[in-house]
Image (cartoon, rainbow, N blue to C red):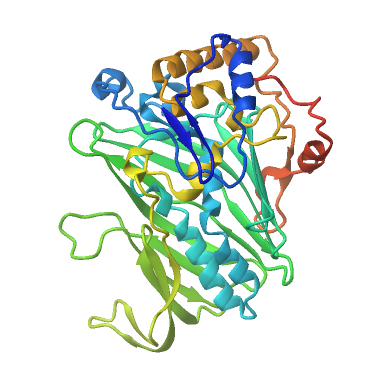
Length: 427
């Protein structure tokens, strides 16, 4: 096996003889292979391990998938916290939005950002690791992208993750997401529950929206494929501008392009200003409305527009992505070892690291050990309903009235001083 980056490589990597089930040996191994220089552009290729899917999921009909133990064969070597952080793949859209003088133009870029977060899922039919309670993930990209991001798993049943991003380029984003996933026979539906908040520092404009349902098809027979469907409403709570964005479900009988997304940007008086169109797996465009008329039959409005302007275009996947879980360039870097991260960081999960290295049997055994230790802590009362999140606290949002976990501060200060004394030992 070869782990390689832009300017360094580690060849014939194997677990050291002193690796043990407590994970200390693996952590020592991690310390010896910390990232140096530029970020990596490759990970070990995915092994070709055959597994009978039906033998695992035939007893899962109608059940909540997060409560069913699964071998790592169904996973990708990233946690749900890292997958959540992938929403920032196109953070430059928010940088552009922060510089917009018009709130309506700003809303166009915010809407394009909301659609862009699905582009990383287009060929990703594997599931991320379920985070352990108290697990965290940080992404410090101040130098190149201008933002810092931190996530924490704040609840185990139901599984809930809190996420906070601060950008020196004029915006902050936060969210608490609970995943509702079910097996329906021929498909698996994944429905994220929760509200995403985005605030621009200069104007104070505060936006909210939610996520649509992701569905993985052909679970039993055929080639797996994923679709996104549903409507989301993006609202500026300061100006009352809004955009209802429709993710059209795939239909064999439809003449429309697959992955189609459409929306109309409206002001507080419900006057339409922009038509948005595109696909969640490729690009989004906006076109300024210059006129409108009633369609034949009077049911719909037809808008006349200027020439469309491209808001967002998906980056091409890295070379050999099909053998690296179809990870994007950002995803390839998320599990890369970095100095100074908290001891609960997803990069330090031994089962996830073993899977990335191609040692799937060992990874499955380690996954069972970690989940077993978590059950013991819960049964002993160390974890459970009374669990206190370390970096987030529950607050009521003044715009929506919803109660959710919001970043209370302290993580980056703890990293600066390397004082992790309050962190639980979960790995």
